[in-house]
Length: 357
Image 1 (cartoon, one colour):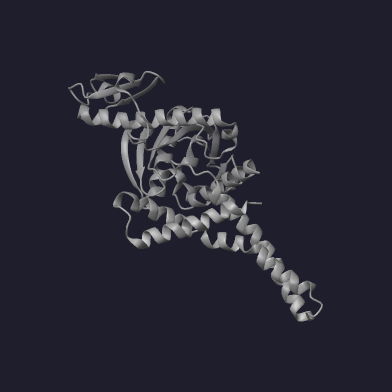
Image 2: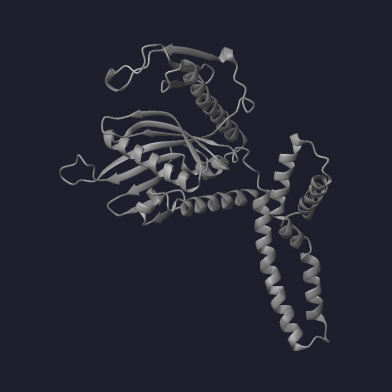
C-alpha cells in the first residue's frame, strides 16, 4: 500500500510545474530541468489520479451491490466493474512503486565501455573483438554515437583491450547491465581436432563523469610521460607523447598513447581516470549503505559471470535471470539485444520493489 500523501505529492508537483512552465517566467538555467521533470511526471500523472480516486469509485460500486433496489443487470455491471477496478488498482500500485523507486543519478549519462580479453589466449582477444562489434551494431540501431578512446590489438587480429565512449540519451541506463564476465564456448579456428574451448572477456561500463561530478586534486595525481610503442616494439611516435596517470589515493592507473599529441592523450586518460575513481567511490558508498548491491542486476560487478555465448548450440544465456535465447547470431548482430535488456531491467525493478516491502 502506497501512502496517499506520496501520490498527492506527484499530482501537486505536476500541477505546480505546469503553471510555472506556462507562465514563461522561468530562467533558461532552470527551464530544461523543470521541463524534464514535468515530462517524467506526465508519464505517471493519470495513474496517480486514478489511484487517488480508487476509494470513491469502489464505494460507489459497492453501494450499487448493497442496494436492494438494484436489478440483476445493474448488479452484474457493478460486479464486473469492481473486478476491473481491483485489477487496475494493483497495476497502478506497481507502476507508482516503480516510479517512486530511488533513481540512479547516472542513468542519463553517456557511458565509457571497457572490454578486456580474459582467459583463453588469442581466442579471448577474438571474442573481445566480437563483443565490440556487437555493441557497435546495438549503438548503430539506436543511433548512438561511438568514440574510440583506446584499442590494443592482438596478433590474431582481435583486441587485447578496447575502450570506447557511447554518446546519446540515457546510455548508461541501458549499457550498465553489460558489466561483468562474458564467456564464449566455441571451436577456435586454430583447433584441429574440433574441440570446444571456453574463453572469456570482461566488460566494464562506467558513466561518463564530468569534473563537477567528482573532485580530483592535482596533488593526488602522478603523471608520467613516455614514448609510444606499437605492437612488436614498432615506434608509434618519436616524442614522449604517451601518458600514464596514477591516482595515488586509490592506486588506479590509466595509460593512453593512441594520439600523437601528449595533450590529447592526457585528456583521454583523465576522462577514463575520473570514471574509474567515480565508480570506485560509488561502489564503496553502496556497500556502506546496505548489502543490496549483490541483489541488483546492474551492479557493475566485473568479477560476476553474467553471460555465456555457446556457438555449437547457437544460444546465449544470461545467468542473472536464467534467460536463454536460441538466437545467438541475431543477438551478436544486435537485433534482439533489446529483448534481453528489457528482461534485465524488469528483474532489477522487481528486486528493488521487494527491498521496499
